[in-house]
Structure formats: structure tokens, C-alpha cells
Amino acid sequence: MSYDNNHQEVTRTPADLPEVKADSKENSFWEIARFAIIALIIVLPVRWFIAQPFIVSGASMQDTFHDKEYLIVDQLSYRFEEPSRGDVIIFRYPKDPSKYFIKRIIALPGETITISGTSINIKNAANPEGFKLEEPYAQIGESNRDQSLTLNDEEYFVMGDNRDHSSDSRTWGTLNRDAIVGRAFIRLLPPQRIDFMPGSAQVNE
Image (cartoon, rainbow, N blue to C red; front, top):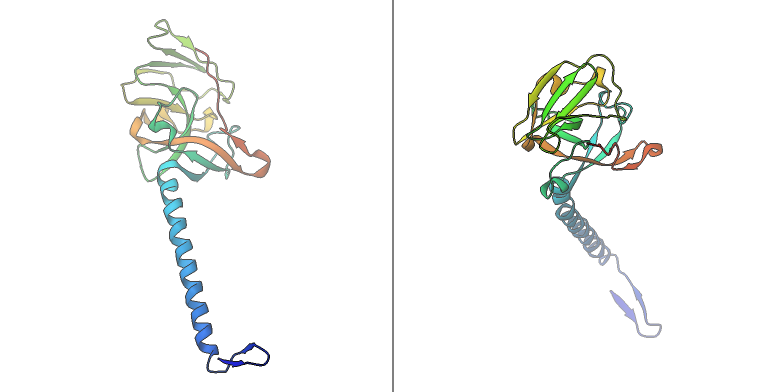
């Protein structure tokens, strides 16, 4: 580079230009690399341990959830508390753990569930005589399979809200605690159905 002492201006000779461009490219590369590393450090733990996205597939949870809806699943809460009746959960399908299902918890560990026609009765320590489960969220047809079983300490009974179009515990059995990924936390898409804790329900006992 050359300096004119009279005007104090800086000019660049042709020989200087390639060196300046090389430095600029190198700086840009390291800035991008540093940003990517920081993003991975932040995003990956969140993705693996706290929350992750899922897309609803099928009609088993209509009208609570529709096909192609985009959900963020809370994976953290169940590390500190147990799943509750009425929670909408995402879990690994017991018959094929590579697949993920979304259903609602109907019966909890240690309870006895009896299904008769469209009626569901739950017996537990607090209700030894049992109580009829009220389900305002469900589309109940005539396809409930009559059955009765008692869950062990790590088992849950789950069902889809759209009872006539759901493959659930009535068909393939109970769900083990360790198969649960998390609960539906936020519905992001479609925009007109954005919701926090979508599908949550208060279940009276």
C-alpha cells in the first residue's frame, strides 16, 4: 500500500487486493463456523432433552388434532412429574419403536379399566367402587372393544380421541412408561390453530 503525505489518503495497489480479499473470505468462513458451532451447542441439547417437533399424521385424534398439524413436544416435564390422565402424549409405538404415535392417557398405573360399549369405568385407590370417565374431547362411536384389565406400576392405557379410527391400547395393549417421549406443548401450524398445551383436558374423578 502507498501513502501520499500531502493528502493523507490511502490507495491500494493491484498487488494488495488479493491479500485483502483472502483475509476477508477467511474471516467470513470462521465467523460462519463459529456461529454454526454455537448454534449446535444451544440447539442440540434442546432438541434431544427439552423439546422437539412432530407432525401429526392420520385422523386418530380428530377433532382435537388434524392431519399435518405441527407440534412442539415437551420432553422435560415428565422428568420431574408423572403423566396425568387426560394428557395428550407422544410415544414410541410398542410394536415398532421407530414409529411415533399421539394418543390421550385414559388409565394410570395400578388402575383397573373396564370398557363396556361406549362407557369407560376406572377403579383406583381413591375410587375403589370405580367412576365413569367423562370425555368431552372424544368422538365416541360404537367400536369400543369390551375389555377389563389392571395396569401394573409402569403401564398406561391410551386411546385416540377419534375412537372409531384409532389404533391404541384397545388393540395392541398397554403402554410402558419408558416409551413416552413427552406431551403436546405447542401447536405451531396451521397459524389459525396455534395453541399452548393443545388438547389438554381436566378429567373429573
